[in-house]
Length: 459
Image (cartoon, rainbow, N blue to C red; front, side, top):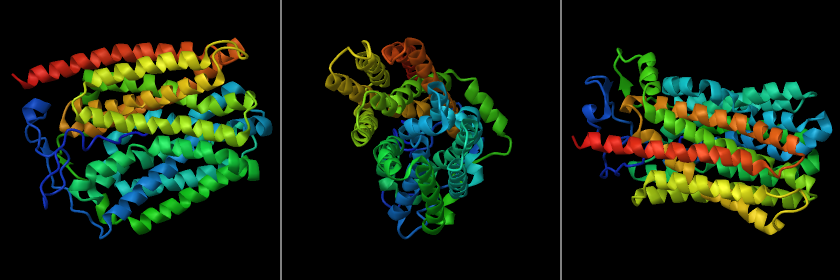
């Protein structure tokens, strides 16, 4: 999640810091190949194969299909939030169980993000995405038949596996589909797939379930996923899914994993991402049930919550532009975490019947999500810059994904537990504020890592 959620995961890793090659040049990841000494590569460890030219006569259309597939997968992450009240009525769902259901889709990323980062390219991008969408379709269809909360929880975990198979290989596939001059634009659009899907689910979910019920909402997601898998097979050329760089036989997956886990940069980026993702999903994910308890009508509740998720897109896009203009990454991170801490405190402070006016509290929620959107895009760029070497980029991104999923898994139950103890949501800002404080400290550590990297490059 951004994904916002996750929110929205490996969106900017291929174009940050890159210059567009001249017309007719082959598609390359970062323009000139980095120096093996500067990046810590072992000479001869990587054989750089030129990326293929776009394999479709309509590359933009194929790219849109890939982006739509990502949005479809992310809808499964966002479909639960607007359904919590209906599930409470139909299955006797408790508030803490709702927290685990909300975050259960992150189990796959929490446990297998690093492994998927190592092997995703070997699976084949299009094949992985089609298989992931098929898993999502089957799991959602089975969820529509669920008669108990444990059944639904198990299927949410299965949906997480499908989501991971769609989200991780998509950026690489997009890079191979479009001409070099369009890569940055298309990957920028991909970066908003998670908050866009979350907003769409929050907007349409209450309307659909008010008409046909929550089971029909699960069936709709199943049908959309199946259609999207078919669309990928028909609209995206199989040749575009071939792997890019190839590694020397001596550079085993275990070596790449060990180098990633022994470097401080990937750890700092990953844990910092968890501090962001945990509080964003907790606050935005529980807004529907908070509004329902406050007596807000369903359609209005959907619009308010969808807008709170959608403004996260503005922060993501704004962060990318600011980084291109030379803004310091740790300044953007610090701004995001400070505003999230203050905004969450304002949004939830006071007793259930008191506190700030409702309009002011909602404005605080918008600031929480919008300014907080500066954080994920900044961390995407740092994951690329602080990877131990060029051939550990996917492994580093997978490690960051794993911690992002861990944050999204732990955040909602923690906030639900605090709300249950307090008898309301008035102390939510304390839990989210603690995450912001840890994130702020980590941002200073990341600033030191960048300084050390810059000093090493000038030697």
